[in-house]
Image 1 (cartoon, rainbow, N blue to C red):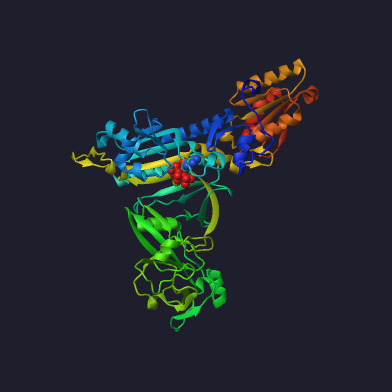
Image 2: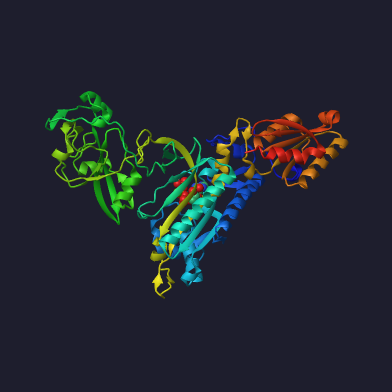
Length: 575
Ligand code: ATP
Ligand code: MG
């Protein structure tokens, strides 16, 4: 492709609202145009890179017999009503009406739509297993679209859905998909971690789910893993055992002490000369399930944090939120002095399982400016608590395998999930099994954020001068820079261009007649793996072209007739 024949404009200024590197570079390197908040136009070179990502995905999907279809972007309310999700999906699902006042939405995901297709097209278990996938636009009215393509409202997703007649078949296919995803991200050239993900309240105990996380400091997800790689989990669902807690044992009985104007755990602990983990943190949450509201009192070691995802899953809630001041007042509780003793009204009580029930703690006395010292849960609790894991695991905890947990940040680029029969059952979609009996097929769903993956690659692969594309997804392999003035050397540049066009390398020809300064700056910003320069002065003297590698700045000179062979050698060394 010749630059003179396409649309490409780089920008010097870093756009103000672009907080992370990939967003900045996508805009500055002329790959992306912002249409509006969370809405983008992919410019020509972004299209090139994404089509390479799509090709890799397509090849890996075909290898495991997944077949491509394309569901409509807009889906009618009826199919979502059949699964019950028309009501359940939050405002991220953008609903609207057409001219006949029919309810529709922009699909944020397509479990219902694909299950509907399956119902009409598949009749017998003999057609199973079946995996359908598509790569198209999804729309989510994200509350905070940000970081450019990382969290956009409109984005490109690959979503696959598989159907099986039994759990073993689903397990086997899940493993194949897991491997395919591993191949995809390896082929793209990214450093990633596969972590156990949260299955949500719907996921049953055996339903597996994993996320593919590209490692990057700017990642929105927190991950916990062990050095040897035997444990890796999204922090949302990670389990950790606290190491070395200094539990206080004593024979003292419960005592009320004045703690005037002290409300935080740190203040109270310092005043009473105990460590924060020798206090208990008391939190009140409202849990809404099928329209019914229940209040929960949750106790944690003083320096632990509640994991809301765990609480939501444990209670099977549709929604949870911290009690408001009014809620607390109604329950006769005083913020800053809440505790499990002398509760004035009925509440479910949860103790985090890290709490040693025979140790002594400081807790709120449910009376303004008072706390109890020497509260021993096994002795002083009026009701039997529910003892479960509701805290956020963190680094320095011990993993289930006994090794210390380490923390990393990640960008979720893929998510695979065993759905079971949740959609086929709720939508009453069945097939005849080998005995002629009706059976609900089991499903798996498997997503990749294609546009997010491109952004994640830039987030991971760049330097101060610009992008350093992994070679597998670079918009072009070679940037041909022509620093030529006379017709004689313009002809040389054209010859080199044709040589490259006819080779197995894709080439972007910078024929804009710029000086070396601005041209090389642009080339570095765009970050194609190889730059080949036809420099009039050098060529006149040496008859040689200059080759420069973007990732390590290595420079090599060669004659025109050696170019392709030299590139072949160099290409192997490029990540
Ligand atoms: P997240 O936790 O980041 O919101 P999600 O769990 O909602 O993602 P899925 O429903 O699993 O995402 O969607 C499949 C994939 O689509 C994700 O793994 C991610 O790569 C991508 N994706 C999701 N939301 C967005 C978005 N707003 N912008 C770009 N890509 C997205
Ligand atoms: Mg997800």
